[in-house]
Length: 111
Image (cartoon, rainbow, N blue to C red; front, top):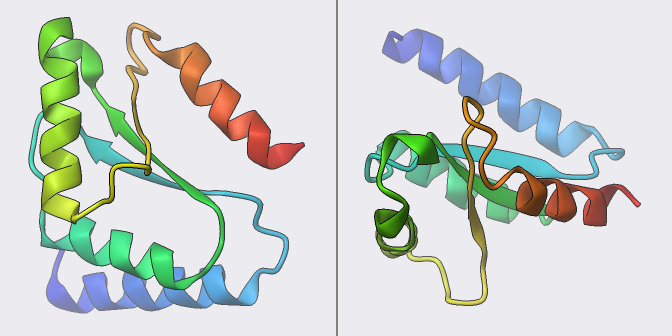
């Protein structure tokens, strides 16, 4: 995506998140296999400024060993400078692993 397109998308997201009062939950999707990039970091910081509830989902958890999931989550937290109380939920849309944990968290905010 070009810089101009990124700016347009960024402006759209910013306007949407700040103008919609009925947003119940913001979901930030990250790829568990990679460290968050600059755009991921920027989006995380931006979401925090909205003061709206949010969760972070680390998708593609089926692409790494189950024994590496906690380590990958730790690395994402470190890169985003997330405090220890904040939760990042692993998830796999392909194999549906960790699905129950994600839905429990989503349902907390939709009740």
